[in-house]
Length: 406
Image (cartoon, rainbow, N blue to C red; front, side, top):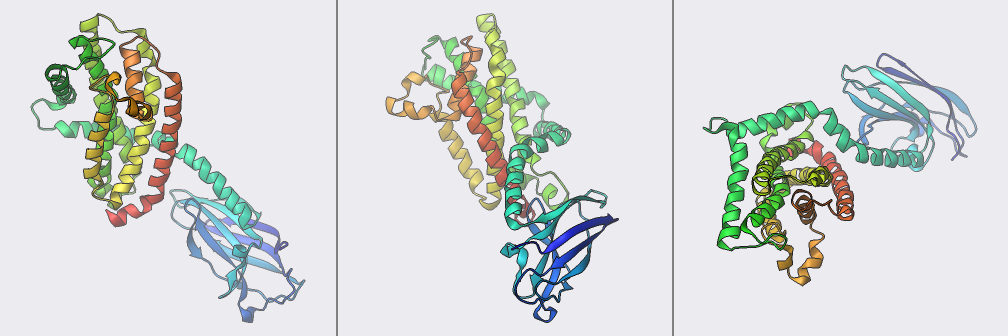
C-alpha cells in the first residue's frame, strides 16, 4: 500500500495538537462516509502500548485517486508519561487500516509532571517500523532501566534501608548493636554444631581455628543473599499502603532488601577481619579482589528479589516455600564442610551453584591470599546480569496489577 497521507504537519499549542495533511485514496474503490470511511486517531501509552484514547473521526468521501485536506485536533492527556499517536484511515466496524499495514502519521508526545506537553518526532510510518522501534526500545530499557531506576531513587533507598535497619531493633535493649550480635550468634551456633560437635576439618587448614575461618568466610556471601531472598516474597505485602495509596517507585522495595542484606554482611565482614587479625596477625592484600565477587552477588540477588517479590503477589505460599529452598541450598553449598567431602557424582553439578562460586571467591581473597577464579566469576557475572534484566522485566511487566491484588 503506497502513501495515504502526504506532507503531514504537526503543531502544538498548549495541550492541543493540530495535525494537517493531505489524504489520498490510492485504492481502486471509493471511500464513502456512508460506509464508515474516516480518518481518526488512537493515543497509546508508549511504554506499555496500552490504548488510552480512541479519538474522534473525520469522515472521508473520496473516489479512487482523489485527495482532500485533513485537519485533526488532539488534546494531550493530563497525566505525565510518554505517548504516541497514530493518525490513520479507518472504516467503522471493519478495521483501522494501520493494523492492516497501511501507512499512518506517527506522533510522539511527552507530558511532564505539571501536565505540560512536549512534541516529539512526527513522521509517516507503518506497523513494521513501529514493531522494530518497540523491540529496540524494549531492549534498551531492559538493559538500562534496572540501573537507572536504582540510581535515580538512591536517596529514597538509603532512607528506607536506614529505617528498615533501625525498625528491627527499635525498643530493644541492645538497639542497633543487634545488627552485629545476630550474625555473630548465628555463626557461633553453626560453628559449635559443625566445628565442635561434628569436628569438621577443612583440607587447607585442618586446625579448629582454620575451620572457623573457612566457615565464616563461606557464611559472608550467604548472609546477604539469604536475608534478601528470604524476605523478598513478603516485601510488597508489607508495604501495601505505599502501593495502594501513593505514587511510589515500587521497584525500589526489593532493592532495599539487597542493601539491607549488604549491611548485615558488612558487620559480619568486620567481625571476620577482626578474627583474622587476632588468629593470623594480618589481612592479605588479596582482599582488594573482593569487589569482583560482590558485583555478581549484588546483581544476582537483586534480579531474584525482583522476580520473587512480583511472583509472591500471585502465589502467596511462595514465602513459605522459599524458606525451605534456602535451607536446601545452604546445605548443598560447601559452607560447613570442605569440597573434598562432596560425592564425585555431585561435584560436577556443584560448579553451577552460584553461591558456591561466591564462597570460593571469598575464601580465596580473604584466607588464601589469592585472586579468585576469574573465569568462574566472569561466567557468574554474565549469568547474574541476565538474571537482573529478566527479573526486573518480570517485575516491571506485572507491577501495574499489584494495587488490585495486594
